[in-house]
Length: 390
Image (tube, rainbow, N blue to C red):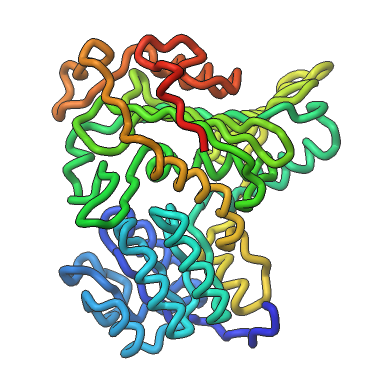
C-alpha cells in the first residue's frame, strides 16, 4: 500500500466504455457489486445505456464526459475500456483526481504515452492495474515454481503462438480498428499489440522479462492480408537482457482457428500454457505428460483487494514495460507489408468475408516451436530484408 490508507468496501466505480468488450467489465462489476466489493456510480459512454442494458445494476449516472463524471460521482475507482488512442488522456484525468484505475490493455499506443501514464499515477500516488487478465492466472506462479525446481532443465527460450480468425467486418466495427494512426494520433491496432497482446505479455511474464529494462533488442516482421493499415499476420522476436529469445507469432487469418498458447522450452522438457483456458501441459524427460487446470484471480477484484487489504497488485504498469517496448517497436517499424494476392484467399461459404493465409497455422506453431521468424522458416511471402530490428 506504500503508506496509502486502506479504503473500505464497497468502492465506488465509474466504467468508461460499457459496450463491446466493455460489456464484460459491466458484468464483472455487477458480480463484484453483488459481493459487496464495489458500487457502480457512473458509466461513460457516447450514448447512454438503456434500461435493459443496465438491468440489475441500479441507476448509475451516465455521461460522455469522463472527467466530469468522476467529479460529480466522487468515484474512488475507474475502469477504462475505451479506444486505444483515448487511454492516456482518460488515465491522466483519473490520476489528477486521485482516482485508482483499471486500464484495459494495451495501456497506450506509444511508449511516450505509457510514460505519461506511469508518471501521472506515480505522482498522484494512485493504484493502476493493467488489464492483462491472463497475468491473473494461477498457472504463472505454478510454472515459475516448476522452472525454478529444474523440472525442465535450463530454460532455453519462450515461444508463443496465436492463430485466430477475424472477418472483414471486424475491421469495420470502429473507426480506429485496424489503423496505425488516426487523426494525427497513434492507434497501433495490430495483431500483436491488441487482439493477441496477451500472447506477448504472457510470454514475457513466463520468461521473467516484464520490465522495460529487461528487453535488449526486438526484431519484427509485420504483414497484412486484409485491406487495413495495421498488421494481421506478424511475428516478433525479443532478445532479453539475460540473452534469451522470446518469439511470438500471431495471425488473424488462420485456416483453423485455435487456442493461443505460450511454450517454455527447457533443456530437459517443455511447458505449454493455453492462457485463455488456464491449462498447463508439462512434458519432461523420464515422466509421462502431466496436464493441470489452474484457477484465476480477477484483476478488478485484485485491485479492490489491494486498496482495501493491501494485496499485491498483479499487473502494475511497470510490469508491462517490456510489452510496451514491443508496442513501440511495432509502432516505429515500417508499414506492414501487404501479402501478394496469391498468398491469401477468401473463406468460402461464410456469411461475412474472411481472408485466410494458407499454411499460416503451421508457420505460427513452428515459430513458437523453434523461436524462428517467418522469413527464417521459409514463408514464401516473408523476406529477410523485411525484418526490422530495434
